[in-house]
Image 1 (spheres, rainbow, N blue to C red):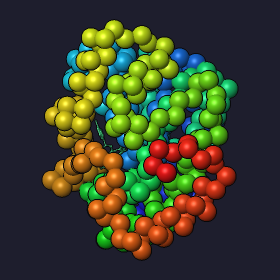
Image 2 (tube, rainbow, N blue to C red):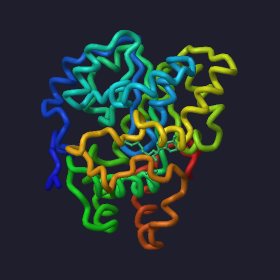
Image 3 (spheres, rainbow, N blue to C red):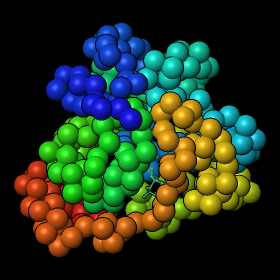
Image 4 (cartoon, rainbow, N blue to C red):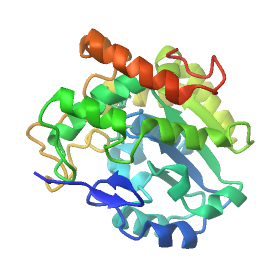
Amino acid sequence: MATDYLWIEGIPFHTTTIRDLRSLQNEFVVRDEDVITLSYPKSGTNWIKEIINLIHTRGDPSWVRSVVSWERSPWIETPEGLELIKKQKDPRSYASHLPMQLFPKSLFTSKAKVIYIMRNPRDVIISGYHFHKTLKITKNPNSFEEYFEWFLRGNVPYGSWFDHIGGWLQMRGKQNFLLISYEELHQDLRASVEKVSQFLGTKLSSEELDSVLKNVTFQAMKDNKMSNFSLLSDIYMDQRKACFLRKGITGDWKNQLTVAQSEAFDKVYQEKMAGLPPGLFPWE
Ligand code: PPS
């Protein structure tokens, strides 16, 4: 089990993160053709990545069934991911949990398509807690109470949820930025996939759309070893205990947070999110 985080620019990271994020930030060249998935961890990133990958193949599942998800859309903040991205052909597809202030600066002058997926932070806490219990590349919580406190203080990998979302939402309104939520995917997957494919400029036939939908259900991804993280090396995760596609539901926080924790969370939420327009978040 890992004992601590890797701290970069005052933010905790997994120990597998590129140490020199400043060079990445200054030197990586984002291309106009790139499709970039951004999120705070445990927000449904791999779900939207799977959707993007299947839109790219027009619903043909052979790619998502033969190549692991972290090679289809690699993480830019890991050395292995970065190498894979450099070898990708256009249009490249990659992902990141980096906060806005640490992301490669060239994004902000490019036309690259950015999809930011967000999720009710209360559910992000629950999902993150279960995940971090099994992860070997980060500090492991001894109890839910401990993890809850860490989360509220931003002492979890990638830092504060509030800062992360507050940062990236500054891109709201730009033509190349699509904001989507985990809750929206749950509520109407078909409409959500259509929204993403329209944003990506891909018009799918109804058969192609049906095939995307069939292959991105919770069960389909759980059954696909290229998408369910069972092939991830034991170096990263304790595979005996891990379950990446854990429950895949909305509102699981109601089963876990005590009334006191829920009230404490609401207080911080209201303070930190004041100033953002009402109606922006489906969980409010
Ligand atoms: S990570 O590790 O940060 O990249 O995790 P991330 O992919 O962002 O989020 C993991 C949670 O997303 C759920 N998930 C899904 N839910 C519904 N349907 C599908 N197809 C799906 N794919 C992933 C996954 O189960 C994690 O949520 P929890 O609540 O832990 O189940």
